[in-house]
Image (cartoon, rainbow, N blue to C red; front, side, top):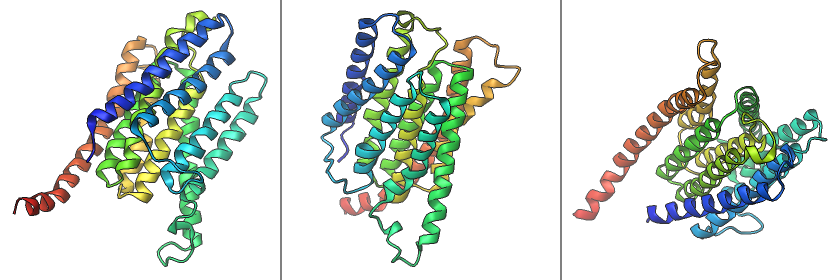
Length: 307
């Protein structure tokens, strides 16, 4: 049975490790600049995620045997490595985005590797259909990733990370209610590490010598890939409806509404609250529908146990 206390411990462990590591390393090299801050965020997130997964006692195997294994052991390390490289100032932006888009194009194939969807033996999933589905998923991931990265450069703030954390946590709960409990639990250390890394980086900006509007470019990339990975495995290896999956993936794009001419010059805290409210509305609706479907599906089982 799911253990809510264990999930909170995993989130807390991830958050404590990331929150401890990021400020400590930033203060160790004051005025080191943006590259150092971005690198610290990448490493801090990775350490926090590892700590949270250890608390959860996730049974990851090598070589990876399922979608969750491939997400945590291939996809997440890949995005961490790419964002580490992309944060180096000498790396051209076109090269950084070439790496990001290449990863976005390959993530669906990585997560579906060895599954029935790519076997070509099932009449419902011929190879051409698998190719079309993976291409559409890759395009969605690349689009969300590029748009949120662009927004983080235009209007920075911790609210971007908070909306991604909110979407990821809602995705995890929905995936659990869709029948993939193991996949959904991974959201807790992901969220704990991401939010602690974001807040830790924000608090230490004065020590690095960069403007308070700066956001480490690694943060939106890590958040988007983690969100996409959870939704993807929930949709293909659980019973997550496609409509719910698309809504949760696209919900963070509602942050762009704050860039309307009537809103973009408002105070930062007001913009942050507006973004959270806008993103929360569709996410809460998805979770409520998932809870309703879950209760309806579980009702016959509960009635059978009482008879």
